[in-house]
Every structure is written in C-alpha cells, then in structure tokens.
Image (cartoon, rainbow, N blue to C red; front, side, top):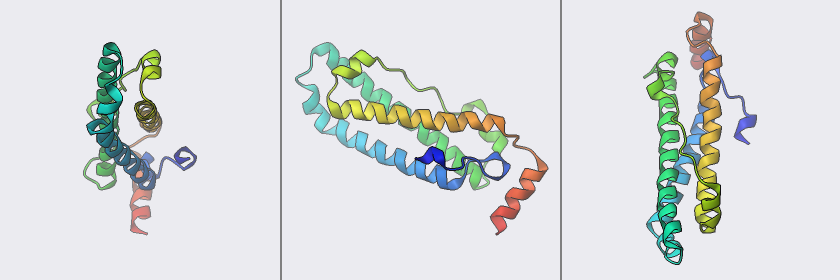
Length: 156
C-alpha cells in the first residue's frame, strides 16, 4: 500500500506524505500496544506456561522497542523536512533506523493471537521503514541541483 507511493522527493528526502502516513500508523500501533499490554495482556498471559510468560514479556518489550526506533526515525525525517536537520545530518549513524530486535518464531506461535498480531505488525512496520532508511543511501544529498529543486518545490 504505502510502498506503491513515490518514496523520495527533491533532494532525495522522503516525501512528507509518506512520512506522515507512517508516523500516524506507528503512533496508532504504539497506542494499540500500550492499551493491550496495560490491560488485556495480563489476562491473556496468566494461563500460559511460566517460560512462555517470560517470553511474552520479552516480546512486549521488543514490540515497544521496534516502535520507538521507527518513531524516532520518522521524527528525524520530519526534522529534515522542517529544515531543522540537513539531509546529510539525517544520514548520521546515530539518526539511522536501529536494528529491530529479533524474535523466536516458535515462541511467537505460543503467544495469544493479539500479542502475535502486535509482534507481526511492529516487525512489518520496522521492515518497511528500514527499506526507506536504506533507500536514502542511494540518493546524493548535497547536490546543488536537488537543493534548488527542493526550494522551488516548496515555494510553489
């Protein structure tokens, strides 16, 4: 769905529309995860085997970690769009998308359906944003032509 959109605009920056859509998606998913792990997850976790319960808790932290990495990366892209950071600064390793925590497929299969869905959704979102992050490396960020084109695009 979002991947069918053009991902880069003038100067190699990711288009605001895509960043905004991914940001909204990530915030909704973060809110869904918070609501689930703060409430219904407690009841879902109770009947599980003790080792699976520990795994359940670990996976909830991994979901949160994936989402926070994605949100931080998207906020960096918004800062570039707002002129608060240069595209080159966004490529600094400290501002790149961090690696996603891995998960054990066997453990995921033993989790309640809603927990499995959150793990899958957060992993998918992180994977998609990771492709956008990697795509930034292929576009020169300091081209004067791209800079002029970006300024003209923003003016109109």
